[in-house]
Each structure stands twice: as structure tokens, then as C-alpha cells.
Length: 557
Image (cartoon, rainbow, N blue to C red; front, side, top):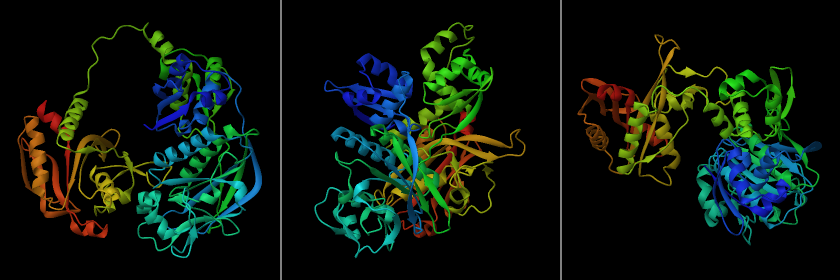
């Protein structure tokens, strides 16, 4: 989870009242923030969960605490000022969204918090700027409309943030710290993306660095916010979170829409001014929490979490989440917020009146085996990675030339990247390696996670299976490396594996082995076909193994 630093006096002026140390320790966990420490100088360090990026700064945290405490809520004024932007159609990174916040009152700490929010959002929700990057600019130094276009890397020049001289786009990638850190995101581009205003002033070179001439200072009164990236929803989410957070520093709360026009005649408006609206049955919330709340109490609790709530009847409420809450998807999220507002300690007190359990709690055998595997692999120098269970046919099938292998599809996907459930771990491991190859060509990584396999005989039409995946790569990697590690792992469990030649699409047939334990096939290990790696610009051989932990558990049970 990202670690956030705020200063107590700044948090208090956003909340609107003094906070004692005891209140900070009590209330931050109630909004999903874990306090790391509170220093004598008033610095507060806390961890915020990945699903609440709106809490990555003092503005968002103060807003949440103000609402939880029942204090007056800062309402935003969304206005249409007719501001426009134009995207010229940028391959690989086609989407851009903008927003304007007016009437700001900033000091040094406020500027620090805006920059922290920008960086934390780009690193986490933006996947280290690969999925989305962010820019914040002094609007009064810019003349709209704004243009998102490709520019000549040699002829185009501007002064990068925190630099004293103009540089070409190509020089920026070599001579600045941010350029060297993020230039891999533009690898293979002939021309580089820039944002400019109508007079040709360069605002930034996304996703690398902003301009020194348009930077935000304590004198800034109006800001322009942008996000560029690979997904339209993501860039709007980011701009919305940034705009609503910065607006906590505005005397008027005024946020202006910006309409971005695309080459295909579509228009993307940002920021979002409304959140998800759900009709929720009180009984569903009560059943999930295991406590009796009542509809009137549910309305009160959700209002304290920032929702606009309307009681429909004695059994249902209509709840509209704030526009910056990107984590609210269904009634379970509503129930979680109600539980936090109520207090988990009260839920626990009511639960203590239930009949005693009939048997002691214990870890599930599959989880115990998974933990054991993690300890073994970490001991041998492997790093653990965690990929999403949701995937797409291109990654699951095309990356390793799997053809028409059947996958479990998502009926109503929200993103093209997540349209199916993964069938195996190998593509995710290989994707992690390919994304990091330039910076770390030698790698030992593993993943333990579930996959879903279509099965017509199963009641649900599919079965899930826990698997272990390993990836090893260095200049002299061979199949023997993979077999050696698997053998050691199995022997630590008291098992004796055997290996025989087999075939797996995407792997070299003569360097692929099927893994058996007690005569049962449990997985495979092999070398990724060099043709696939060559197309991705990888020179080192790559060995990947994948085994079923469910099958291993049945064998050792």
C-alpha cells in the first residue's frame, strides 16, 4: 500500500477543527488508512489502500474525516466554461483528459500535497505512468485550447521542470532524472507526445516531465490538470480525483469541465461530476454485516461517508457515491462504508452475542501449502509477483501462440484489457519479465494464484485451481535450472518428481518437460520459444514452470 505523509496543522485546516492524537489513531482506520507513526513535529505517516486513491493526500483524507465527523461538507461547483482540447490521435497512448480548478489558496505545504497526490496516483493507479500519467499546470500561464500531439524530438524544445535551460525532447530523455527513469515508456517512438497551448507553448512531454514555465507555485490561483494514458476511463478517473482533491484548497470550490475532441469526432468530457448511483436494500447490508441497522440509520451512516442518500421506503435507499470514489461498484461496497461509519468494534460486540463456534478456526490446507511454497522460493532468491486474475485473449492465447484455447469470458467487461479469466499463470509471468527486461534482464520471479478452466461437467461450467508459476532468466539459463529448482521444492515437501519430454505451445519441444509426481501429471517446465522472445527484443533464454498446487495437495494429503 502507498505510504502518505501529511502535516497535522494542514490536515486540521482542511477538516476544520483540531484533532487530538487519540482521534487521529481512532478515525484514520475508519476511512481505511493505517497510521504508521505521528512525529513530534506533527508529521503523520499512514498507509492508504490501493482501492482508495482519493485518500493519497491531506485534501482527500481531510475531506473523508470531515464527513465522518459530521462536519460541513465542501460542495464542488462544476461549471462549463466552454474550454476545449484536441487530441491528434497518439498511437499506443491515445487518451487524454483535462480539468480546471479555480480560486486556489496555496502555500508550500499545499503545493507539496498536490505534488504528492500526482506522484502517488501515477505510480499506483497509473502503473508507474505506463497506464496513466498526470500533469498539473498554472492555468494563467497557458492559453487554451490545448493540443495533444506528436512532435519532432530534435526540433521541439522547452525547459523541463526543475531545470534552468531549454532542451530538445531527445535531450530530456538523456539529461534529466525523470527522462532516464521513464524513457522506456517511449521506446521505439519516432516522434514524442507533447501538450501545447494555442500559442505553441509546451506544457509537458507526457508521460516524462512537465515544463518549468507552467509549474504550480504558491502564487498559482487557477490550475489545469491533465492525464494521458491507454484507457479513457482511467484518465477521467485520475483527473477527477486530482480536481476534486485540489478543489479542497479553493475558496469557491469551482471546477470547470474540459471537452477533449478526438479525430474520430468523439468528445471526452472531464472531470466526472457524478458518482455511481445504487439502490440498496437495507436487508442486504444487514445480512452481509450480521447486524441490525435499519433504513434510517443506514441513511445516516452513508451520509457520513460522503454519499448523497435518499430513503426510498422502509426497505431501500438510493445512494450516490462521490465522483472521486472509483471503488464503489455494488452493494457490498456500500455495506463496507456503512460498517466503517458504524465502527467495526460495535459490529464485533453484537457478534459476540452469537452462539459459540463448534470448532476452532484453522488455516485451509491449500493456503498452508501456498505459504510454505512462498517461504521456500523466497529462500532461494525468488521475488513474488501478483497479476490480476482477469486477463484478455491476446495475453492468454496470442502471446504464447495458444490458438483457440477455450477461456471463461466476462459477460459485461468494463475494460478491453480484462475480458476473460486467466487459464494459466505463464502469460502473466512472461509479461512482467518483458515489461522489466530493459532494466533487469536477469530475473527469478514466481507467482502463486488461481486460474479458471472451462469444464462442462462442473455445475458452474468452470473449475478454479491454485497454481505455482516460476520464471528464470539469465544469459546461460537452461531447462536444467527449472528442473533443479522444481526438484528441490518437491523434495522439501517429501515428494519425488519425474520428468519426461512433452510439448506445450509457445515452448521449445526439445526443451520442455512434463512434471509427474506419483504417476500423476502436475505441471510442466520448459524454455520459451526463442522466436517469441526475439520478436519482443529479448536476448536471454527464459525458463518457465507451472504446477498445480491442488494436485500436489491431494498427493500429500
